[in-house]
Image 1 (spheres, rainbow, N blue to C red):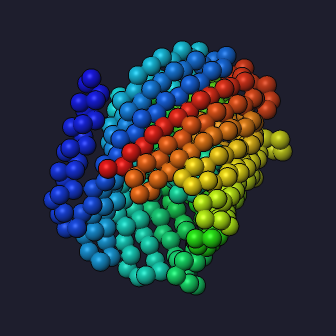
Image 2: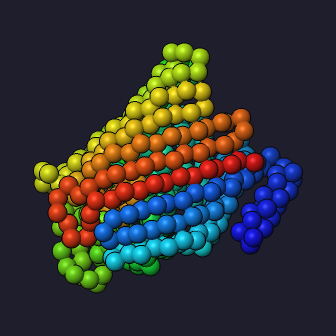
Image 3: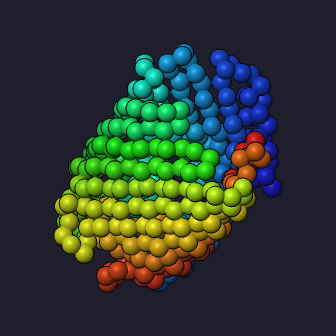
Length: 359
């Protein structure tokens, strides 16, 4: 009952904010219900979550605007873990992104603040979380819906959810640098987006290294005070997505990611993710196969959907998206196994679902 009252209060208060229209401000409230079922030898988790958050956009001028996504997460359930409390239920406020965007010219976009890394669409490298970042994007459009672009980022990496769940101290000032070149060809019948990124992590903390050994990485040292990554992280990431809709309500979508770490040896340095989907109206039936080797990227910063590092497997899912009604729902089954023996990892089965309603 308490959770329901909080959700109703959140919805009505944010709708009241919308009516203010202060400086053409737009406020879009969301309520999201979801859950995780995780089962392996190290973890048994059954978690149900309610997220209430808002998308806030404030255009200060013709060239400057503020973008904020923030809210509260309330979770309940059980988490029996022998090593890392990655799925421990939490109750917390969260900042998903908050940045100032400056567009002095039509072809130049500058962002500074907490920039969500989901825009790279590369879960084997970075999860959907905000990094304190400065990002510079040079757009070169050659038609109304087609462009190529160059994107540079200088960031401090962070995984807020994992940090708050397990209490790790991300000491020092780690850095994450990316240089990206991409193309975006958008159309109703055919759409293509592809990006190539050069990335590098530097000065990662001992606490992050210590926790990453439980997520598949190769670590030296035995405690949060002296653990270090055996290999560095500097390499290339390729991500792409193509959509083809030959019929009125039936289409196909394919996406993929290839990850390569220059600093790690063979059999430890690559990650691959392939996804194929059939679109029927608002529904998408999706199948995925993936392999992420032990040291392709820091496990602390990539997605737990694919069990971080040193795992391979597949996923089947069903998604529903209705942009007119503001509804996005999905349910996925994930089955994966360790690539090489690791005392902290085992065969893993997951069921993940969520329903997001925009008001």
